[in-house]
Amino acid sequence: MGEPLKEQPRLENARSEEFEDFYANNVQFEATLWDLRLLFGQTDLAAQKVNQHTGMSLPWPQAKLTAYFMIVNVIAHQATNGNIIIPDFVVPVRPNPSDPALEPMQKKTVEYLGWIYDQFFGTEPYIPPAVAAYDEPAKTEN
Image (cartoon, rainbow, N blue to C red; front, side):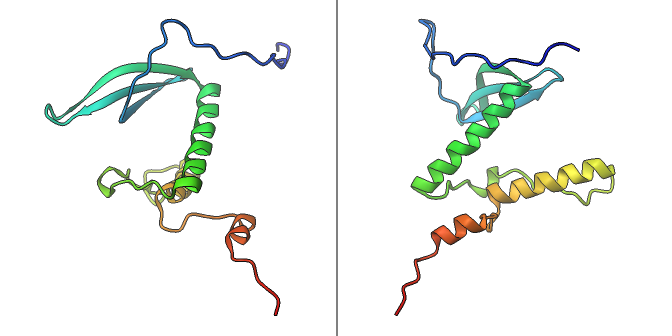
């Protein structure tokens, strides 16, 4: 085995001269053993299609970090601006852990994915007790 990874110094962020900024209202995913590719596009209702304009591949460690920071940003946005409303017709189907074709390990994974689904799209997402207590009005003594 090789040596364990060492901590790297913090890097400064700088935009290259070729930096481009695009808008996407559609994202498709392609997964390989090595990375996750995100294909960004924009809906063209007149043509009834999505025009994909950018592909970006992320190695799995970066995909995991990106997923975490996207959740952090969604939660922070909702805490400030209220729940993000998603039309029912674009909400994905909830994973079904009772599918008889699932192996036991797959069933556990799909059950967990169902819980995550409920946090994003359910009517009663889990709120940790400490957070729920923080949201309750302060009780006053008489």
